[in-house]
Image (cartoon, rainbow, N blue to C red; front, top):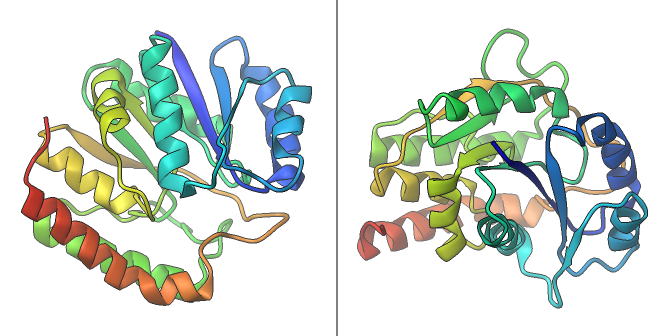
Length: 235
């Protein structure tokens, strides 16, 4: 099965180099594409210097637009599985094979890597308080609308089979898309689950999840979920 690692990146020059060096040992197993979300730094050049294809966006689309661009690339190039992997280096590539197993076996359409399952779940990755509150909120809203409990609704470490990423290549949430995407999968009757993984703290740069965005997050989740519910399932 052909597997594509999709790495959305915005001004991640300090972290991307280390991640791509780490991924060299996996190049025989997976293909890689970096989606440069109109970075102002040398993010694209770092990818090119590591012989990794780069999709350069002319305008900043945010994480949703960058990830969807990667899905479109995966569809166009005939991949069987797509894996989201953040450019900040917080997602450890050693866990990719664990995400792939339920998909390769046909058990699941989408698998989410959760940093909040298992013992000592917050040891390696310390969650900022406001982000944790926002995630608890989106977990509750997702449970109320789908009956599914996902502990890490904001995780961008996910693997998807062709059917599910082809679905998202046509339509994908724009801003903080992770929880809304799960509602869309549920409506379209895709099967998804989360598995425990270990994530790492960011070593350089700043998270896009700022204080302002953290305070706005619950409203955005409600509006996003309401829009999806009113619009009805997509196929």
